[in-house]
Structure formats: structure tokens, C-alpha cells
Image 1 (tube, rainbow, N blue to C red):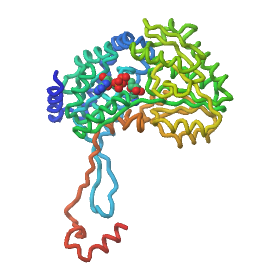
Image 2: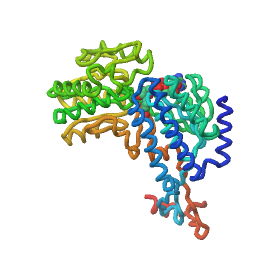
Image 3: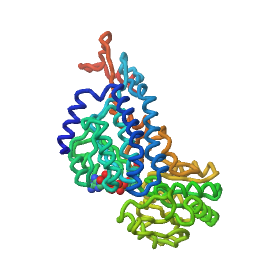
Image 4: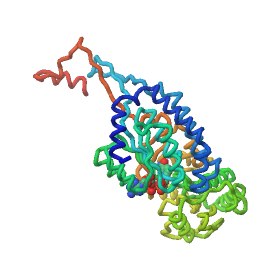
Length: 455
Ligand code: NAD
């Protein structure tokens, strides 16, 4: 359907008030849960066809987290939709003050390819919970998953409520040119700027969930064996194509050797001597990304890994040391299974390095020193993070997820999704039984009373 016609139908449907009742929203969320169960294998197979993502990873990081999120919303929605009483002030006395969460209307969700089910449907849960209609534009880089999303959601939802619009950049642009009531974009900072410009044309409110280089710091007090396992897991997951993956490693020079050895052993334990043969290791999404990643291999010394196979779009988990000055791998978001390692002597250096770069989406610090932990968290600005682990903060829907500065604007998950997709309307209810005259002209003699109250 043409973008303008689709939006018109969604706006008419929204205007009918059909999406607003809580029962309706709960019914739609249960439908979403049911379709995820019913078509689970199709989703798993589609993501596997797109980049050989292992089934366990697809369940845990795409379908499972969606069930978890829906369960939370189903449990809490009745509470979240309630008007919230707010305090009154002397100036407004007597009044009753409250806020109401109101749906925006029709939401446009633009999703990336790297978690192609989760990042299309997680915002949808929030959009439906808040009482909106939604159009989802999935990524063209994972065509099998996008096709399943289109077919399955098309079967279970009417397009006035939820529609999937597959297509390339032109499709995204056609949708962006329409006057949606909210835009929720997940993707690169480069496209984020295009989305923001499009939103500005209609003054459409938006969320930008972007990416960037997420540092991972390991100091000399950390439990190196556990740190190595957790970092290797976070880098190997989805073959490193995770927006919050540890992008580069900053390790205290005194523990570099031990940590690198631990990382190597962890990768070997997870994926065997030849990760190419491992059923638990995904592939790179396309040739462009494969070539981009291979070009980084010359940016340092290969300590571990470094194998690749173009016909399979395979790149092994790789650790790089002695990174050359001005290397691209330290400028661009890696978004693949390569881990450049840089040593430090003092935490001051680390903080300076992190602060000299755009604010990251995530930051990880492995330490047993609580002063160091506190200092890093206080002095560095980043979207979300973890202490003594990586990536795992995303598993908790009670923690809002989003970036700051170049890594994004706004956040979502759980109650934060509900808030993101709702306009908070503030109401002051006044009564007729008292009408204090200070605000009315003529003002003569009233200023001194105003000054006594507002000082
Ligand atoms: P992308 O920005 O290239 O594409 C995202 C979406 O935007 C796709 O649907 C695509 O069709 C559309 N698009 C691409 N070019 C466009 C244009 N010129 N105009 C309008 N729309 C356009 O991102 P990607 O490659 O799919 O995903 C990788 C990026 O996403 C990385 O930077 C990663 O860090 C980030 N990311 C962020 C999060 C998060 O939650 N913060 C999650 C996953 C990925």
C-alpha cells in the first residue's frame, strides 16, 4: 500500500478510538505473544538464513526477550494507564492536579538488521501498550526475516493497527516524508541524522536508538578469568554485530597477558579450534560489512583469530594488539567479531580516552575497586553499562535502554517504553467555590502579595 494511504487508514482507525481501551491493548499484546509462539520456527529459520544466527541466540536475544517484555506489560499495564495525582501548590490552591498518559497516534518504527525481530517488535510492544497504531519498516539487509515479519504480522493484525512495510532506503524515505505522530528509529548515527531532519519537517517527536564505540575497561584488580569469559561471550554473540557489544578493550598493562590468554581460551572453549565449524557462531550480514571488517585486520597485530572466508561471509573471533596510530578500527564502530586491545597505566588515561570520543551507547568496567567503579560511572557519559559484565544489562526490562549524545536520544523498555510512546498530558482541575483575585487586573496594590508568595 502507498505510504500516504496506509497512514491515512491508520490515522482514521486511531481517531475511531478503537486502540485506546486497555482491554484492546492487552488483547493485541496477547495476539503478538501467540503469533511469536505459533511462528517461532519460521522466525528462527529466517534469521538463520539471513546470517546463520544460532537458534539459542535467536531464542534468547530475539524471541525470549520479547516474551519477557510482553509478560511485564500484561502484568503492569492496568497500573501504568492510571492517571497520576500530582501535588498542588499555594498559587494553584484549590485544585486537583494530575497527569494522563495519552497515545500519540500512528507510530513509525524503523528497524536495523542486527537483531531483526527484537528491534522491530520491542518498540511495537511499547507502541501498542500505549494505545498507538504502528507501521514497521524492517531492514532490507535481512530479507528473510523481514519477509516473515511482513507475512506473519499481516496475517494476525489488520494494517490499520499494525503494518509491516518492507523495502530499501526509498521505502524508508517515503514513510519518513509522511506526517506520523511519532518516529522510533534504531540504526546508525548517520541515518539517525536523516531521520531527525525528516522529523523536524513535521515537528514529529522521536526516539533515536543509535550505535557507536562501546569501551570495555579491565583494571588490575578484576577477576581476569571471569572477565575474559564474559567479554568473549559479548563479542562472539551475533558474531559481534551487537550495538552494545564491547567494541574495544582498555586493559591495565600489568594484566594484559593474562587477560589475552583468558580471552583466547574462552573463544576456544566456546567455538572450538575452528569456529568456522561451530554451529554456535553466526556469519557477517553481507559482503559490504564483511569487506569493511576485513579491512580492519591490518590495523594491528593479530594475537588470536584473523581467519576469514568470503564465500561464507565468515570472520573468526579475532583479538588485535599493537593498534597503529590513527587506525580506522579505533575511529569507526566495529560491529563485528574483532576486538582491538589497548593497554593503559593509569585510570586517568582511560577516562581521558573515553571522554575524547563521542558518548558511547554502552560502557563496561571490570574491577573489584569500588572507587574506580564509581569514578568511571560518574566521570564518563554513556547510555547504559555494566560493572563486571557486558551486554547483559539489556536483559532487564526495568532498566531503560538508550544512548546519549551521538549514541541516541531517548530510551525504552518496560515502563520506559510505555512512557516513550505516550504523551504525558498535565491537567489542573479548578473549582468554582473560590476565586482568589490577585491575578486579575487592575494590579494596583497586589504586587506585594504576589512577592510574598513567589519569593
Ligand atoms: P542503518 O542506519 O543503516 O539502517 C537502519 C534502518 O534505516 C534500516 O531499516 C534502513 O532501511 C534504514 N535506512 C538506511 N539508510 C537510510 C536512509 N538514507 N534514509 C532513511 N532510512 C534509511 O543501520 P543498520 O546497519 O541496519 O544497523 C546498524 C547500526 O544500528 C549500528 O550503528 C548499531 O550500533 C545500531 N544499532 C543500535 C541499536 C540500539 O538499540 N541503540 C540496536 C541495534 C543497532
